Image (cartoon, rainbow, N blue to C red):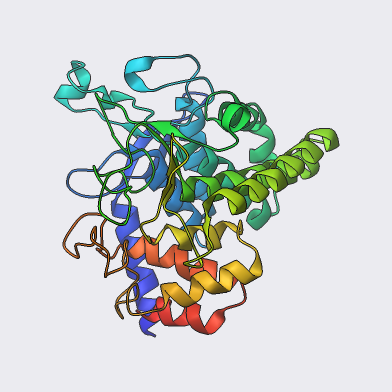
Length: 347
């Protein structure tokens, strides 16, 4: 009964949070806003993760999100908006400062992960609904998103998705987007080129989803084979470059000089969610995430305690975020660790 009431309340709240957006054919859509009061707007990452969570109960919300983001997908390069062809928008604002160009957030693309998340949701929507029509309608947009990951996102030249801090917008462009959130264990921020661990997990799953869509919806077996091969290669590179063998945990990020940001963060739960870790490493991560340094009883800390960078009242350096813990719970279940997943879910 408590779970049923919580789900009903969540769906009611989600309905109240919806905002208007425009689809590829000019249609009016209702999509999830990121939050009241300051984020009641379409934010790509937030809408995509929300739609992934609610997909079994509200597939129409996922469809609206995908259509709205396809309509806003970048078609050219705009340096001040961090836009490149195929990239999925991070944020669309309609306030005075955005309208008059005083801030870039009228249509801002400073997110390394919205584009792979778009592919993840499109693949999940086709699988859950057992209907390929939306995937076929958005094939051009999906292929453009894949092309962005390789051509502009860094996969082709560097082997990983990466970003560079934007002086006029966001310094960090992964989900932990506050200044200093991506750091070494001593608290030193990662600067310059940043290769965030969680984004590699999203990229891995996005490539696998693109492969599945190419087989089931687009009739392109050669493209599917290529995507599967690219996903496998990304996984191999990731385990080689990010895994901290002495700590049995992945680095939070790698900087432009190849140094591993050794702060222990909750992003490892996102790696479980996307399946980029092998079973042995996944179980090692699970054990650490359920340890007192991470698990509070209420959820998983964004940064483990006992590190110089840790601050429980910070934005991303030790606080608990419900969606972050929920992603970890889903990841634990994916690796067959159902008891641990239930522990996090109850928290």
